[in-house]
Image 1 (cartoon, rainbow, N blue to C red):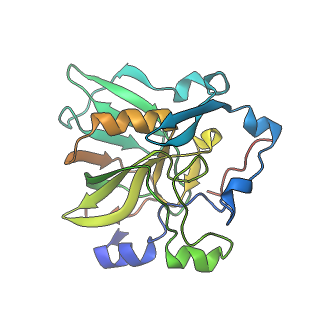
Image 2 (tube, rainbow, N blue to C red):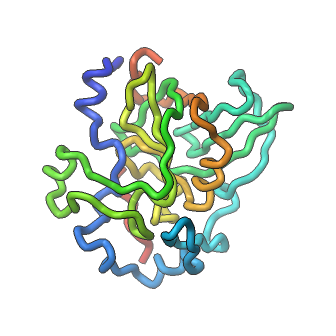
Length: 229
């Protein structure tokens, strides 16, 4: 099924959410002991803090690593394989830097081409009206911080000058990397989105590979995972 820009923007306006985990008073959110095991202390960054990932809890498959990778996309492009939960930053000589990612849940995955036309350090999160109608417990706005669902960095995906509503962003829930968890956005470990932010200038090309059942956006490329315990 192909979606026009108008259908896409109206039907997928809630692309970036925390899957309902965020509460109005996010600072009071309690984690189970099993979830806390995924954190390894806090890191200060531009006046804010994010939780460091406890890499001992993360499968090697999802850790950032240099891999052999062939793509027809030019070096510097980002290729997202939603079926296998990887983002590849294409290098020369058939290599790429591979990141583990969390992707859209069933019914919200998409594919096509886009471009990074906007980047933000420590974004605020403003749940769209449609999402707040479905989840009235969500705040009107959330300030940057360790519980903000967008994490320490956000890269905004555009097509033909139009904001698609999809983002590449960090997550305060490291256990969701490698799962189908969002409303279409691509989530990454905080350390990885910071790394990607530095490597991707404005204008970076993004290709989301076709995944069975994913809609085409403008003819171009889950049930929420609860905290462990």
